[in-house]
Length: 406
Image 1 (cartoon, rainbow, N blue to C red):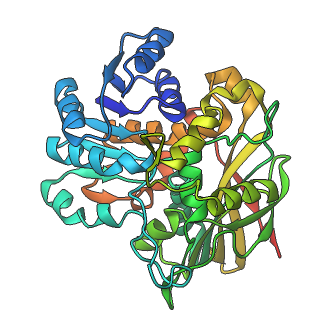
Image 2 (image 1 turned 45 degrees about the vertical axis):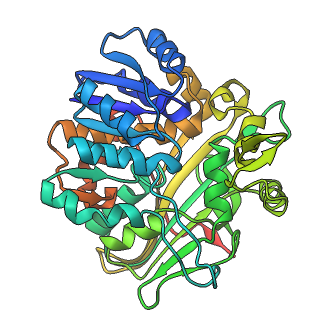
């Protein structure tokens, strides 16, 4: 398999570190707007299967040209979600398999944004499902950790653990701390602002999709492996769109443990208009306020040496078990930052995200996962994925019972 990775920020670089340990690919080209960035990364890997290239992810023609030049069988999009349409289109044009970790952006309902959805996450990609399926071409969307591994957990629960599912409740929490900074997000602030300040989605079988206000419906969730209780709130996320397309259930939710201080900063950015992506003119220069915020904050990829703690991503499933009892199971994966830095040289949050597209690429290369159309991870057999994840040295964990409390 020949792979093109577009974007060599924290996650793209971590993808290379994970893939370097595996033998399923012939060539992996790392590409970015700044050609020095992937070049330095390739030099650090010391592996002649890797190559560096320049590409403008905002220009579909530029991506198309590079896909053809590298003869890529698969294109992994490791950029911000604003570049999904261009890279998605380039893969469609060239016939390559497409993978991403975040889907096309949503647009709130202009009249009732906190009651009903407008354009949902991924709507633009799913509108192309028929064309991709007709060509026999696969777009595997949302294959990071959340979405991604969380969807695999939902599929595993549906196939192996439950006869009837009431709720698929994705929950993410951490006890990570960054020394030396008053405020330092551990993931792309551009993406964090987008998903946290948009109206969160909830899906229910009886009423379909509805939205709520940001940071709504708080609950305390007891995370495993020493993290402990974390308050989680509603956040817009792809699982709420993806899971009910395939998994029979009554309700799908996503909540994220953000913390009071983090929520306060996001609210302030919103009140000041600093979350906006619409350019404003400053002394004759057009600049988007959100890009200024991102430029002013430390690059999450560089924070590993200052970070301490563990992050947990998982899926809580409730319903009637295979043995007929009513119960709940939390399936999860944890990443300890010290271990991630020691073993991979990358901080926990980006490493946890990067693991899953590499596992998926290996399953696709071996023909274990096959499909056509625009499909999420929940459309594929979960067993081989979880087995291979364990073979990577990253097994998942299981907590019996419901760790939530009001």
